[in-house]
Length: 100
Image 1 (cartoon, rainbow, N blue to C red):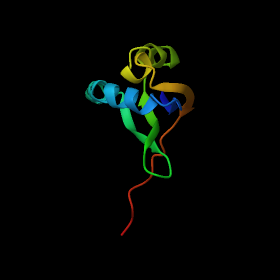
Image 2: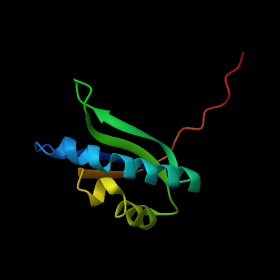
Image 3: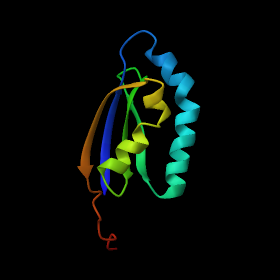
């Protein structure tokens, strides 16, 4: 089952520094997810100035409990980067190949 995760960083003055410190570990965790077949797509949510203020990710897990178990280990959660996390069931559209 696929899930859309919209995660917002904290808005306090230390939030960008927390993200910077946890970023390498978070990206390593995402690389493991990709290797395991759980990562569909994801990236940073940006503000108008281009600063990272959150993340949008689509992950695939057997069920919500498995996703929640993973989220509890993600460095952006354990290091308190993500302060608001919304999870919605999701299905990536399967489009037919383009016709020429």
